[in-house]
Length: 280
Ligand code: PGA
Image (cartoon, rainbow, N blue to C red; front, side, top):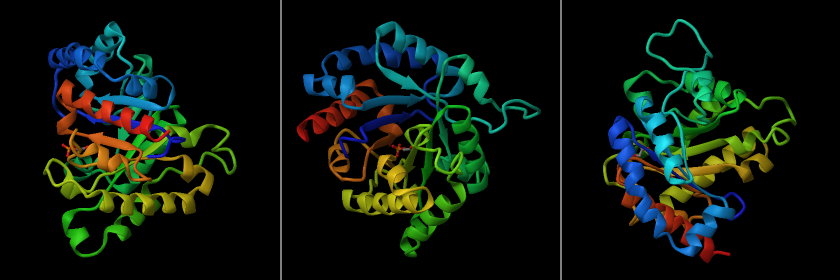
């Protein structure tokens, strides 16, 4: 982590927690949240620690309302959003629909969308460009499969995903002024680590994150790359999050399974806050 970039702990609920379970999650988060240490509270209040969850569409409103009811500072975003703002796309939802309900985060390019729903680098880029243009904050996921890692292709895969999938700058020289770099977040998620319990080691994560940041510097600018938050995802838990966050280029976590329980979600936020405060 790096104090200037802050830390983001994002929970990806995938196809879990309908509206009732989402409300129960928020209700049960109140206890562990009230027990966060002063250091963690300070990190949330003014040191750039953010918490976020991506519920399924049908639970978005319930989650947001229940967090608001309890005064919990946890943002809520959508797992998959079309690039067009309206039109003949049966089964899809658009950015303006989410904006109308007050949501401003989207998740793009998750490996499960790539594996099961035909997402490609080209559609990842279309979504990310459109969402950023519409003013959303976007978490864009990349990562290699086990076969690709074993074949020594990790960097080649990341380079391809970034070259073809990263959104274009709005206008040369304008990106920093528009705060554009602050609204794009990357998530390095090795596919072999997702849902498998096989977390990347801090050394593996740091190596990949440093590579991703260097690629972003080439593609955009060193100034934008230096500000870019890069999350690690793949079997992050309350037990291993500290070691990952201690890597200089790891700016948070995108967490699936361990984000579904309020206690473990709060525990990861607590650890992030304490690590941030310890580094000051
Ligand atoms: P996991 O999922 O934490 O359950 O491995 C991470 C993700 O898919 O974003």
